[in-house]
Length: 275
Image 1: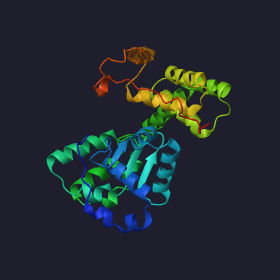
Image 2: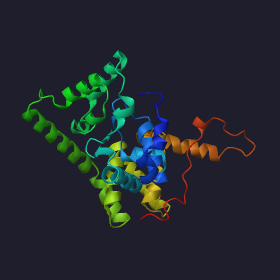
Image 3: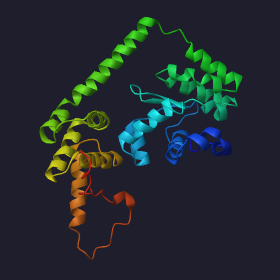
Image 4: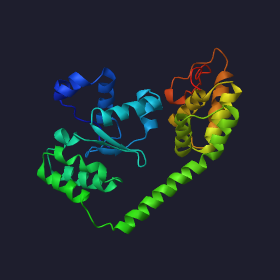
């Protein structure tokens, strides 16, 4: 992962940026070009949940922005199954030089791409011939037989099926206690089960119920746990204990100065406007 990304000043002079993009579009596009998941080749894996977390948007807003950038601006492609995104004009400014370190990095990252079809539309925007040939060889590689490709697809389907099955209890719990599910909340539950665990998703919903709150409150709890690198109930109990100890501290005790030692406090008013 690079520590920085170049953004050319031409970005602000581009006719499409000037005439077609809203301020929100420009913000989102800059994020896609510079976020920590970006790679040298312009294809990288990132979840919609991570984008929402980084930008402070809802998952629905991210879905709308992705759809706009795919269908209206024609600047990206996104594979929902592999969670990979391709910045189609990335090569214009980032793949114009081909020293050995860059070529080694490009080779490594090309091997890590799961959906080769994402690379096809990047080819016309790669000015450097050596890098263009690397991409081309990888895109048209026939070393994997059709039978192996089918097996890979089957494994991917099985994996997605397992994720959905793993979320069954959480989905049933929501329906029994919160009401009818909509597609966005269903997808959000499945993604949280995949990113954390069903046990933690159930616990977050139980806490929302205890506060007579809706799904957004549970979602905010899960975001806090994700940010705290919580992976199981033991971690949750440790955070709860830390929070209680802090509440029970004498008023004249010095405040905790380290940000890393400050426990998250959940906003009990979160989620009032989201079913």
